Length: 117
Image 1 (spheres, rainbow, N blue to C red):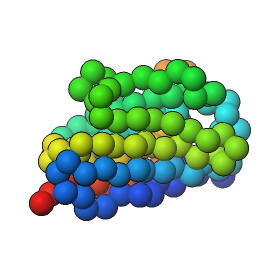
Image 2 (image 1 turned 180 degrees about the vertical axis):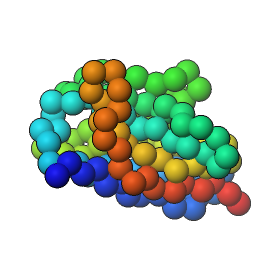
Image 3 (image 1 turned 30 degrees about the vertical axis):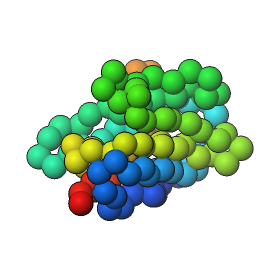
């Protein structure tokens, strides 16, 4: 069974940092590009970042490139997202997803990130 399990979310003050993790199982993790996607309250899904199979190529939308860092440890089958200088507008549920043929075919259950003082 393919599983993606996120962790590391929580409440953080503006300007703070968090590191999210996504533990993958049930498939050859290092064969796949992986991504983070978020959904803010009342809004649609927003792509946050992606990383290729060996971690040497990363992708970000322009608005997040300076603050977010995606990485992976293929030996641990784990995807990470380091988020710095967090803002209230970063409040969202963060999902990790597996990328296949241009689509995200498996998703985790999500982890809540709340940025508030």
